[in-house]
Length: 434
Image (cartoon, rainbow, N blue to C red; front, side, top):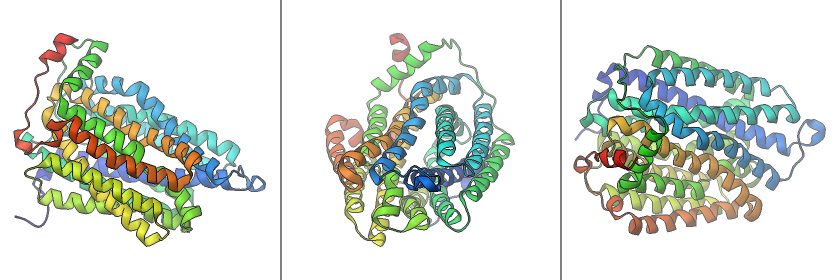
């Protein structure tokens, strides 16, 4: 078996363009996210006489949580419409328009750098809300488009490459963002992000994608309910989506990394970039392995064990007083999460017919966004009540409990064996119920 991942999937040039767009956007998002987090936290902690708010650690951590909540609300309200749009409209055009809007928002973030807290924070929160609107439409379009660009039998390999590219961007993005912020300025970070988003727009604009096929009998909101009914009936899809929601909602520590970097581990912006990149180091390593040696059997048990290990590593991070141990724990969380993500994404794509992919992805992204953005709000609230360390320890315990509970609640998911045995479920019952 080859030691390096196969590059065969990139012979499909449209997929290569798609993959280039995905990696560029991921890198830009990560750079901006790490910069926004430190910028907001620093403005909140900075004394009022120097243009800040002069808040306590707990109050500033809560403000970080509000950034996540601001991004989540538009996702909650609009993602079902985004899924319907991905099934009805041209998916490539949705991605082009969304990325142009993202480019304009990056310019707004650049402007916020030169303003005091009283003016900069409202701009950042407005950008966060608008990014939430963009994120309500892009995942469904992106995840519904790429399966059309490669043969079905190559989907697991394409998913592995998607993840490897994304995780590589997540390694480079936060580390580069933190270092550029520390050695230069936040404005420089946002300028680099602008260049990356511009490249992404060019990449997807020049991709020769298949012509969009209009759905017959598309019926507005009934399509949304049809998608919800399909997910409710498909226990593998439902279990995979809800597993991510619960684990990352409680177990994610990403929103609190600025707190740990500034006031617990005392490593500043540069250390924050390394902490933020650590999970991606583990994830990229596992993604590289999976791209060359895909899981062939017992994929369900692999996923459940990975979730449990994720919880244990989160506990270690929360309790660690050492920077190197904190980095190591985060690397393990990323490696474990990558196994879980790889299995979940493959099962969902293989079990869902193409004409339902947009709506299923939109519901999936609501859960993913709830686990990430709303999870950041939960982290901020927990940090306000339990302190930053207590909040992370609580999250690690919840991840372990969830792995045990989902093994009982979704035996079809926990016992899944081979990807090739997964078949698309008929959508007719969902239509009859709709």
